[in-house]
Length: 65
Image (cartoon, rainbow, N blue to C red):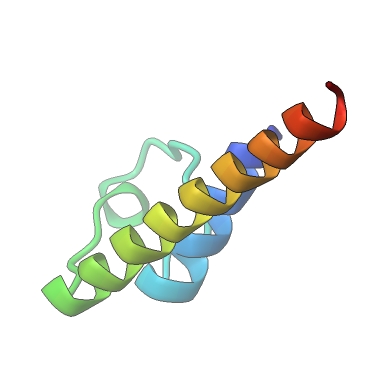
C-alpha cells in the first residue's frame, strides 16, 4: 500500500468509520451513510495531510540543494 493510500485509509477509518477503501463487491460493504460533519472532518484531515506532505517534500528539496 502506498503512503497516500495508507493516509487515506487512516482518515476513512478515523473520521468516517470505514474499515477499508478497497472495493469488496458488496453494497452493504462498499456504500456508506455518512453525516456531513464527518465528511467535512475527513476532507479537512486529507487537506492537512496534503499540506504536511508538501512541507516535507519542500524541506527535502531544500536539504538536497
